[in-house]
Amino acid sequence: MNSRNSGGKLEAFFMGKGFYIVLFLCASIIGVSAWMMAAGERTMAEDFGVVNEQGLENHRVETVILPPEQEAQPAMAPETQVLRPESEDSGTDEAETDEVWRQGDVLEAAAPVYVWPVSGQVERRHDRSVLSYDATMRDWRTHEGIDIAAPLGETVFAAHAGSVESIAQDDLYGTVVTVAHGDGGRTVYANLAEIPAVGVGDWVEPGDVIGAVGTTALCEIGQGTHLHFAVTVDGVNVNPLDYLPG
Image 1 (cartoon, rainbow, N blue to C red):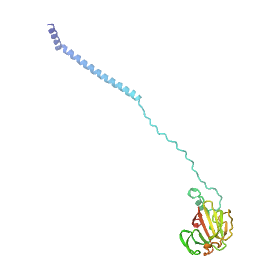
Image 2 (cartoon, rainbow, N blue to C red):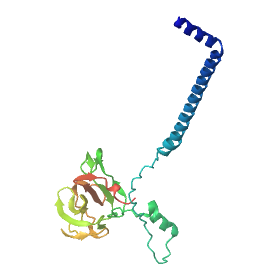
Image 3 (tube, rainbow, N blue to C red):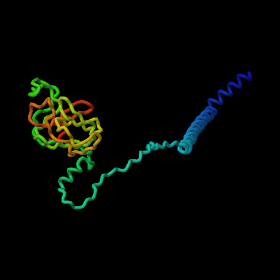
Image 4 (cartoon, helix red, strand yellow):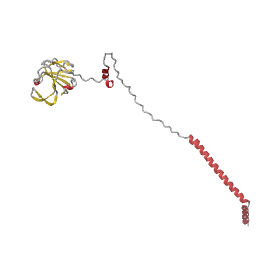
């Protein structure tokens, strides 16, 4: 009986004012819950903003790119200038001066000086590869020097500076004077008069007297009077015309 009465009263309560009370409580709970959720999200957003603005911004890592270190450049040697020597006005042509100082104003070493031993026409040239007819020996043979036509007794000069190495009486070339030049080169003067003007060991400069043109070379006696002149380099005969001035 009591249970039925309690159930009836409860049912009457919910059917009456109780229904609205419950409805109000539910709405209040929902509203409070929504407000709490909104407040929580705002608080989280504000906290995140604070952390983002204060934490992340304050702890932002800045990357600084430094330029690469440059290697030390070696010190450049100062340029060397070749200055023209001051000279007094000697009437030298300006064009000749420019010619001397060509090629970067650096003077070149002067070539060895050779002079003709006698003045005359070359009657027989140097040729070690082609046979030529020899009027005296009446055969065909090579020629290891040049024959320069000159009158009998014509003065013979040293063609290049050096020391008289030997004076010989050769069976074929007669009186022969050989001058050594100290660089492997030698000049040979043959068909000279019997007594030359120099002795072994004498030093001669270009143009110094060696002797005189003679007729002592039996292998060339069939020719006119001349000087037989030869040049050797390290013992090998070379063309004298490659050394004498043109």
